[in-house]
Length: 86
Image 1 (spheres, one colour):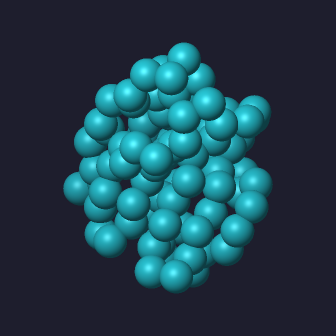
Image 2 (spheres, one colour):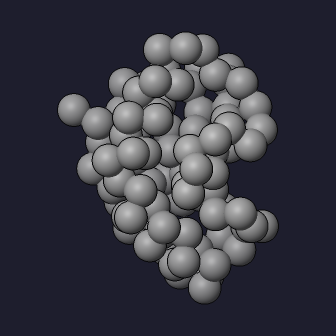
Image 3 (cartoon, helix red, strand yellow):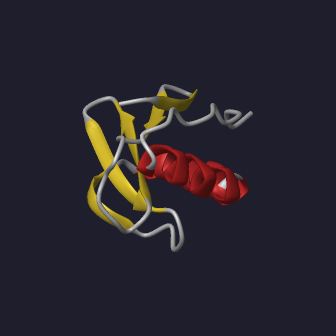
């Protein structure tokens, strides 16, 4: 599972050839969430409040890049790295 970005202990990744809707996975400590790229809704999992706010801020800033990476993964290609939240 390719890692797309890391920041503040949060790891963002995607699986190759994953199921729709377009989404990404985020891990922080023992938490994991799956987030819809288009709506930024949590599809599955739990995350504590502060890391979740950081993940959503980052995803909002990089939504177009996330969709590009989703398309690459759907074609079995490696996604591009995305800048971390600063």
